[in-house]
Amino acid sequence: MTQTVWIIDDDKAIRWVLEKSLSRSNIAYQSFASADDALNALYDTIPSVIISDVRMPGTDGLKFLGKVKAEHPALPVIIMTAHSDLDSAVSAFQGGAFEYLPKPFDVDQAVALIERALAESRSGDAVGESPEAMPALLGQAPAMQDVFRAIGRLSQSSVTVLITGESGTGKERVAEALHRHSVRASKPFIALNTAAIPKDLLESELFGHEKGAFTGAVGSRRGRFEEAEGGTLFLDEIGDMPTELQTRLLRVLSDGHFYRVGGHTPIKANVRVIAATHQHLEERVKQGQFREDLFHRLNVIRLRLPPLRERSEDIPLLVRHFLSRSAANLGVEPKRLSDSAMAFVRQYAFPGNVRQLENLCQWITVMAPGQTVESADLPPEFRLPPDAVAASHSHSHSHEADASTQPASVPAHAVAALADGDWLQLLAREVSQRLAAGETGIIDDLTARFESTCIKSGLAHTGGRKVEAAQLLGWGRNTLTRKIQELGLEHE
Image 1 (cartoon, helix red, strand yellow):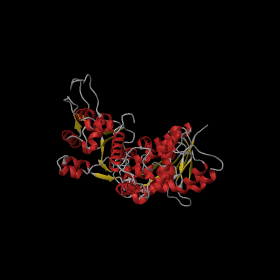
Image 2 (image 1 turned 120 degrees about the vertical axis):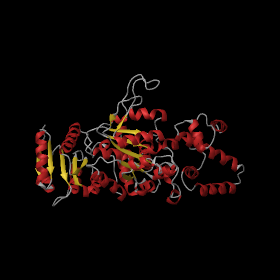
Image 3 (image 1 turned 120 degrees about the horizontal axis):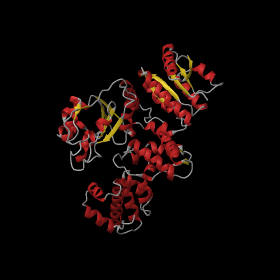
Image 4 (image 1 turned 90 degrees about the vertical axis):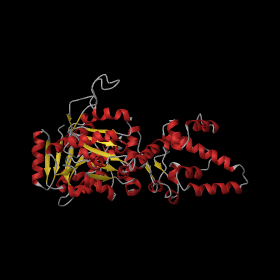
């Protein structure tokens, strides 16, 4: 069966350019000057892919998208949008667009995008059915619209970008979008978390090494700069980069070339660098922990990603997306949140931001009973009233730990308080209730429960690594080991 692409644009020149490009690629097409004409044609035939403008007389591109998706949810629709319309790309994503194409676009890039949509259409994995194919960036909050606009404005530039934002806000997703919508899109996107690589290995990881450069270097190896040649290198947690490597990175950005570890031949670096950090780099510069000249080299364009608590209106959209993706991964029907459950989720502070919300949706998919999730089905910390949640912005732990580590004999509100809310007020209420009941030995019991909760949360946060958990909790390893034994936590 022949696959056909429909082109919808009231601009005859745009239609002509796309027609000629598709013709050269042996892709069948049909053109329409308006969305209304295309909607009429849909009664008789269904194309494989649609590429449509946003602003047109009559039915605009987004209304057209909504009508198409209502009748043909698996049909890939690519939305073309001028830079001034990039905020409407958010609406396009909400409506299930396969992708958006900022104008002016590179013709080869447009054809490549159409070919990818055709391939997914052939495989039956179009975006309407595949959560994985959904765009990585979703949101209609003003701060996210600013991010979309910036991506569009930067689409024809290779300027260095610094992305700032709390952990879990999606800094790597934005870097990927900057790459995907740049002139370097056909070249590699290479990501490296500089905080995750041991200090003595980071130089080799970045710049590669020659045979014999150090013990264990049995052969030469390309570094991330060489792997990203012609494309984009994303350096996450740049604020944690050791000072000596900051100097080498500055030299690459300044001179455009580098040396492998143990090498003597300069290697030209044709790479766009995008850096990200959750830290306040200006403060680290003042403290002497980050080079000021490197900071200014990286801080050419700065994008700030808002924490999720500043864009709570995006939470329902993100929840639907993550629940759909989690369900697809497990091969089950997606669950949905009731209005009351969604209200509780929306008022939560989300210290872990979008990443934490995604984890919650995975937890719901696995743990919550029934297809419609009520507020009582949520993890305890999400069931706190808004005034208790408002007091919390600093504590985060995994939902897997929630399900397995809460002491069964502690009242639910007390567990929730220790986990997240205005815990001092709730602790006072707990003590008052137990005193009123004539209990004794309250201090010892509550202290043991408090330490147990801290230890379990600390170990859950570090993946069971005791030395790291002890340091974070402010104890020595021996103290942590003794406490685990005293509290009977060895087998939990």
